[in-house]
Length: 78
Ligand SMILES: [Zn+2]
Image (tube, rainbow, N blue to C red; front, side, top):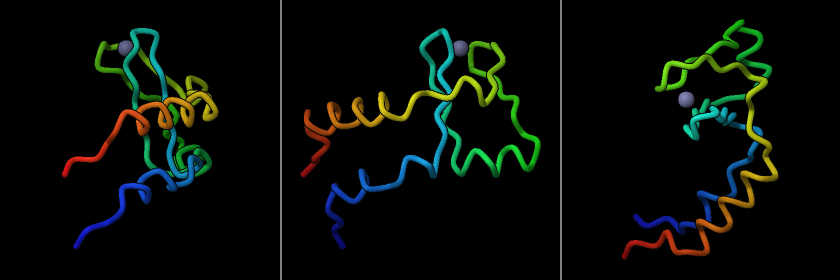
């Protein structure tokens, strides 16, 4: 079974949260922000040891742009 790679890029941005640390590392949380808040899980830790919160959330417009750029460079592996 083959799936067109385009399907990867149609996942709604709201279904995940990306926290960006000052060190450049990105933490990807799956789910909606309100779900994490409702579970009171709003504190996370970067691999560098620095604490992150949901307020470190990366701007989705920037993210979508980065994904477009990345996609344009070719994700295809045939
Ligand atoms: Zn970090």
